Length: 224
Image (cartoon, rainbow, N blue to C red; front, side, top):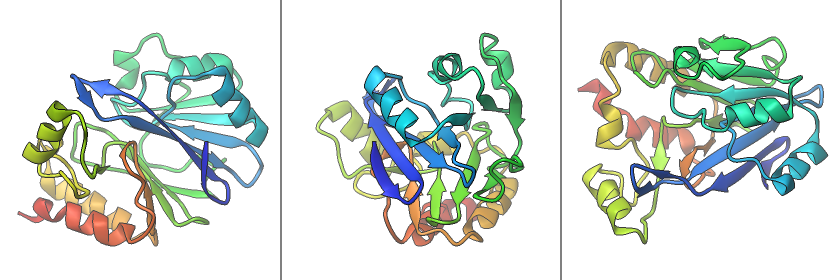
């Protein structure tokens, strides 16, 4: 895993979605009590598990929205003592998952001292966004994408047609998930009130600095 800052690590992995090479990324946060929160878990391997175990005991597993849940069950099986937090509505779609709590934007007592959380309202993503205060890192799944380009031409075409080739943003297809712009705008404004600089995202490159300006620019379309 790549250490991004004190108490925060990330691991990227390949992922194809409808034939598009979008990749994905898992984020691991060590809380002040030494336990770990695993955000948007990727496929588990023995080497990845060993890296995680070397950092601390896994206490929380987070499926942050209705689409980032593929490997949540594997991680819950590997760490049965951990709590699985999942997006609203996921329990109906994944009856095989032993979900311990539903994410609705409120911070859990175990992590409220380290992480602020907010539900991106007005969308079908039902995504809860996390802010790691100590490292000034915003942790998201599908709230933002950041691809310079892609060697895979269908993916490159998607980026160009979606308006995000070579710049961070939210692709046109993902914008269709936003059903109530007014409510979504309020949620984005709340997120922008946080003092973050870095954005750790699932799809594309981590934005190491200037994250608040990037997110502001990426959501100007919500004002229309």
